[in-house]
Amino acid sequence: MTVHTILKMGEPRLLRQAEPVTQFDTPELHALIADMRETMHAAGGVGLAAPQIGVNLQLVIFGFQQSERYPDAPPVPETILINPVLTPLADDKEDGWEGCLSVPGLRGMVPRWTKLRYVGVDQYGKAIEREVDDFHARVVQHECDHLAGVLYPMRMTDLSRLGYIDVLFPDMDPAADD
Ligand code: NI
Image (tube, rainbow, N blue to C red; front, side, top):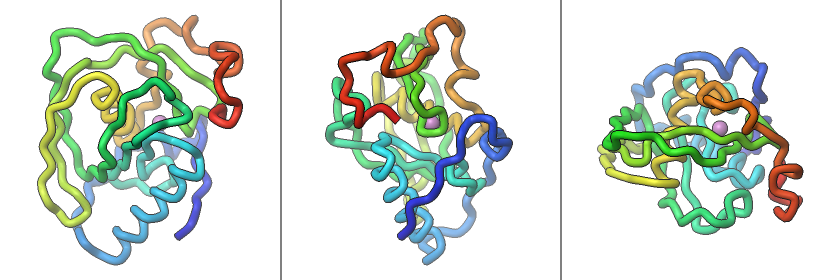
């Protein structure tokens, strides 16, 4: 397994539309997922999309029991989600703070659907279908945006609410400040 360099905002490869995964349960796919897991955990993230390590496939991983980066967030089940399709189930979006391993050191206030359904498959090609809300819904929207070349600042409606983590949250553990 390898910890990969996470591409940072400004890198054109983060702005591409990702390609669907067509082959499942292959050694290559399992190795890619293992590398993504290791890379995400090394960075202390709650999610990672394949394009963030330069792999242009519709594959995201997310989930945690307890996050240093988001200490107040409820647990989200560890999930491997491939070729996802999201359908909003809420009338409104809600603002919440987000960070991104590709936008280190910053947080921004981002409007997201509060409830949605997501469908896709896992690494074996087995169907996944879930209805989720709140932070789980936010994480899925954030990660799946990476598959469409969208970074969270591109979703912000008020850029005065983009700032450095150590300024916005001076009490946060510096270890969680990437
Ligand atoms: Ni991100």
